[in-house]
Amino acid sequence: MNDSAPGPGSPAELADALRATGYLADDGLATATYLAMRMNRPLFCEGEPGTGKTALAQALAQTLDAPLIRLQCHDGIDAGQALYDWDFPRQLLHLRTLEAASGRGGEFDADAVESSLYDERFLLARPILQALRTSPSVLLIDEIDRADDEFEAFLLEVLTEHAVTIPEFGEVRAATPPVVVLTSNRTREVHDALKRRCLYLWLEHPGIEREIEILHSRLPDVPERLAASVARAVQKLRHADLIKPPGVAETLDWARALHLIGARHLDPESAARTLGAVLKYREDADRVHKQLDTLLAS
Image (tube, rainbow, N blue to C red; front, side, top):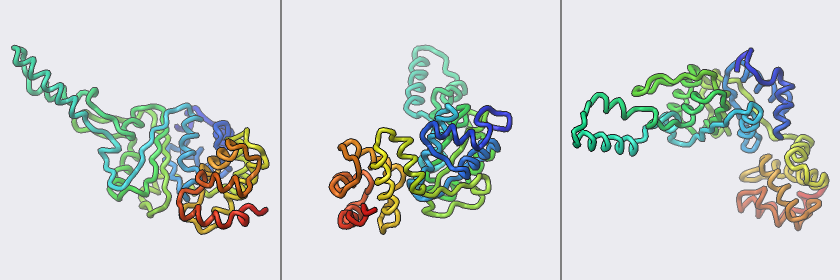
């Protein structure tokens, strides 16, 4: 997206469009996202798990009515897993078909056969190639901090050029650069070279008023009293000594679970029955079970 491209015309318009999807963006987030889109720069989102980094990319895709293409990073990921591969079984079957045809008297041109093996029908597009070939699109590069330095260097080149060259196939260049969102949980520092290519955004957990607003937006059937009590309890949990403090997704899951069992407010009994929706480690659940009265105190 550039200055003349369609889409939200201001950060406020973008915030309204995101709100329509259920994603509530403050002024700083809406402005950073808007500028990244208009300047054709990747948006680098950093913050604790559960602060809405991935959800932002999902909401953007809905807002722009564009496909969301996700690349989940992991230890050992390489360019081939992110870019493309060749469908070797289909290529082999194609080669055997040609050999069988030549054995029945057909002509066998080695150069033509080699060329046919690298036809587009045998090309397996991985997420980055899919994003370059799909216009418009939103490319989510999730948890880049789990990848290594070499993969970062590869990404830097692709995100700068918006193009890749496949030796057997040729250059693939994006007609319209995808909207790119990179996320990091800051398990390690991402190199400055990649960060300099991006606009940077640090995401915090929402305050209690915004969390209640998120609950009302995403779960309108949940009673107001229940939503408020869940938000207050989650805020306390985030300041407790837990292995994995709950994010917004866990807040929504907990409120939904309580509503499904008919709870009208959060009490020790209903909280104990549904802790699995908000806490994901046995040690955390055991610790909180012992402190439910304190947790639920106003």
